[in-house]
Amino acid sequence: MDDKRKPAPFTRRQFLRSTTAAGLLAGVQGLFPAFAWNQTGNPVAPRRREGNTDIVDITIERQRMELAGGEAHPITINGSVPGPIIRLQEGRNAVLRVHNRLDEDTSIHWHGILLPFEMDGVPGVSFPGIPPGETFEARFPVKQSGTYWYHSHSGLQEQLGQYGALVIDPAEEDSGTPDYDREYSVVLSDWTFEDPHDVFRKLTVAEGYYNYHKRTVWDLFQDVEQKGWQETWAERTAWGDMRMSSRDMLDVTGAAYTYLINGLGPEANWTGQFRPGERVRLRFINASAMTFFDIRIPGLKMTVIEADGQPVEPAAVDEFRFGVAETYDVLVEPTEDRAYTLVAEAMDRSGMGRATLAPRAGMAAEIPELRPTPGRDLEDMGMGPGMMDMGGGSGSMEGGDGGDMGHGGMGGMGASGPQDWVLNGRKVMHGPDKHGAGAAMVAMNPQYRLSDPGVGLQEVEHKVLTYEDLKARRPYPDQREPEREIELHLTGNMGRYMWSFDGDQFSDADGPIRFHHGERLRLIMVNDTMMDHPIHLHGMWMHLENRHGGLIPRKHTIVVKPGEMLSAQIHADAAGYWFFHCHLLYHLHAGMARVVHVA
Image (tube, rainbow, N blue to C red; front, side, top):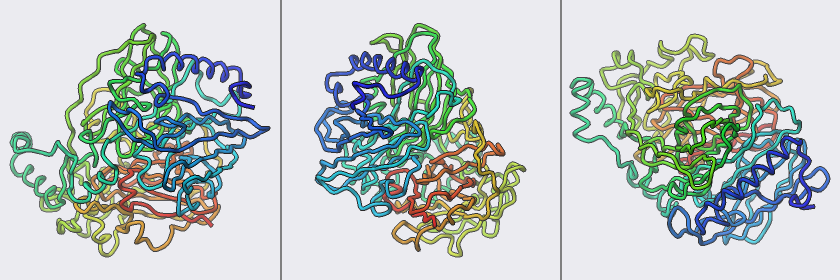
C-alpha cells in the first residue's frame, strides 16, 4: 500500500513531526519560483510498505530545467535536483529500485549505509553498473538510523545533480535523540554550467585554474611589513619550490560554481519555516562535488547532535566546517519573531550558498558579506616552528618534483603534539622514493590537529566545531585494542593534478588493501599535500581517535587537513570488496582511491 494512504508505523511523536514538516514544506514550496515547483526543493520519495519491507522507486534521467538562474541539463532523480528524500526505518528491510533512463551506464551508492557489498553501488568494485534502460534493485536490512545520502558513483555524474538525502528513523521511540518540534533536510551542493569533463581538463593543464585569489605584489609588501624580509622570502621560496599558492584552498571555486541549498541558488533563497520557541532539527548534508563549506546562522546557536548519522553528545557551536560527503544534524531554537540567514560560505570565500529560517513566508534577514580569503602558512602544512629553525629556512616538506628542501631524516612528531595522543612519538614512514612523481611533497612533521577548526577559522571570536568536540553518546560494543596498524599517505602533485595514496594512483595500485574479517585495526592517515581531503570508507565505520577513550565517534568520512596525521580504529566486520577514496570528485577521478578487501 502506498504511504500516502497508510502512514508508516512511526511513533506518535515521529508521525506528528513528519506530518507537521510535510505540511509546512508544502507551504514553503509556495515560495519557490515557478521553475522550481516540481524540480527543486525537498520532496520525499513515495514509499510502499509490504510487510516488513519498504520499497522505493527512483528514476534517473537527463532533463532540461532552470537551475541556479540559468537553463541547465542536469541529471535528475524523480525529476528533481537534488533527488527526493528517501525515508527508511531502522529494523525494517529496504528495497530501492533504481531505473536508468540515461543513454549511459549509471549507479547509486548509498553513502554511509551498512549493507552487503554487492548492494553498495560502485561500478567495477561491487557490481557492474546499471546499463541504459535497465533497473537495479538494492536489497538490504536497515541496521542503523540517522542522516545519510545517496549519489552516483559513475564518472562525473554526481557533479551533474545525481544525489539526494537518505534519512533513517530509529527503530525505537526512545533513541536518546533530544526532542524537537520539526525538521528539515538541508542539502548543499555546487553547480557549474561547464561540462564536468572540461572542468577536469582545465585542472590538469593549469594549476590553480579557478583560483582568482593568488597572492600579489601588494600582499608581498604586507607580508614584509608584518613578518620581515627574511621570513617572507623563506616562505615565498618554500611555496615556489612546491609550485603552489598558499591560497589554494579549493581546486574549483566560486569562479565556476553557484552554491545551492536544496537545489536553489542564493537568489531563490530556500526557506524553512518555524514558530518562535520551537526546536528545529536541521539535517545538513554536504553533497557537493568539491566544496568545503563553513556553516553558520548569525544570531542562532547550533547544537550538534549527530555526526555522519551517529549520535554524539550535544555540542553547542556558532559555526562548523563542513567537509564534502559529511553530514551533521543540529538543533536550533529561534525564539524571536524574525528571519535568520543560513550562511554556507565556501572555505576559500569565493562564494556562498544562502537560505533562510523564518516564521513566515517571504521574510529575509541580512546577508553577511564574504569574509576575506584566508591563506595557509607553513605551520598549517605540518611545518612546526622548530622545523623551520633547523631546516635552513624553507620548511619541513621535501619536494618530489620541486627539489629536496633540506629536511631528510627529520621524521617524527613535532614537540607540539599532545602527549596523550595514541600516535605521540610515532616515526613517519615514507617510501624509499618518497612516494614517487605522484607526490610533490612529503610531510616530515605532521601534527595532531583534531582541535584545530581549520584554515581561516582559527582566529574567529566565536565557537567553531572541531573533531575533538565529537564524543559518542554511547560506547561501541567492540572495545578491543587494535591488533595491527596500516599507515596510508595522502599524496598529490598539484602541478600535474595527480592525486593518489602512497604515490600510486588507483590504476597503478598493487592490489587491494587487505583487512582480516573480524579484526580490529588502526588506520593511520598522513596528509602529505596542501589540500584538505575528505576520506570515505564504504561499508564500515572509522572510529576517530580524538582522545575520548571508549566514546570516540564513528564516522564514514574523515577530513584530513594538510600536514596532519590522525588515526582511526576499524572493526572489519563486513566481508567483501569496498571502495576507499577521497570524496573530492576530481581527486577521485584523478586516482585517489583504493579497494579494501575484507576476508
